[in-house]
Image (cartoon, rainbow, N blue to C red; front, top):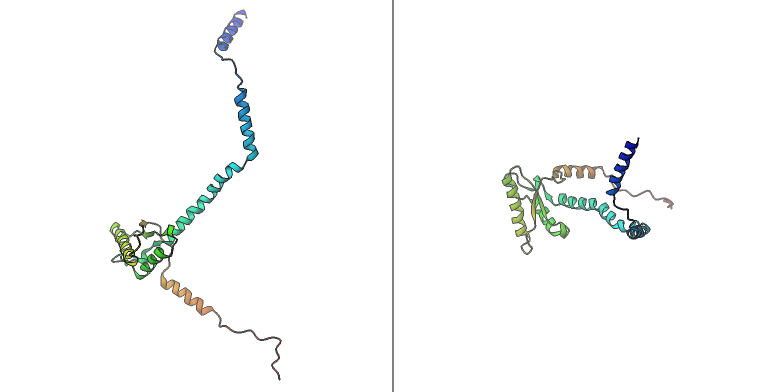
Length: 182
């Protein structure tokens, strides 16, 4: 019993000899306390701007991707044999260069089946842009794999014709309150 008491006291002596005296750093505690109190008093104002940016970021990306799709030339804008612009392609390039918002005036070209087809398409767009608007700098022409949302013209024409055929003939309503007898 005495032996275990001596061992216990020796162990406690060794343990306590390596422990530094506790220091209460009250100044830093109270300065941190005051800072936290001020932050809580103005919450959530400091964090609103970051939250707004994070909330709007996906929409900004959607706008950029939407304009990319809108300014992409698809397969129907190029001649399949020569990869030169068709009339529809020329009109679309002209629209992009003159009507699209200035920050979105770059032309995206859907890649062809072969790399040389893609290069020929890009070259065709640059040549047309140089001819169509000689006083302006050449636009950025970039290749993409994102297909534009487009329908064949004959399909759109068929829909328009069916719509026109389904519209009833215009007619005036029967007059009310007017007597037709003399």
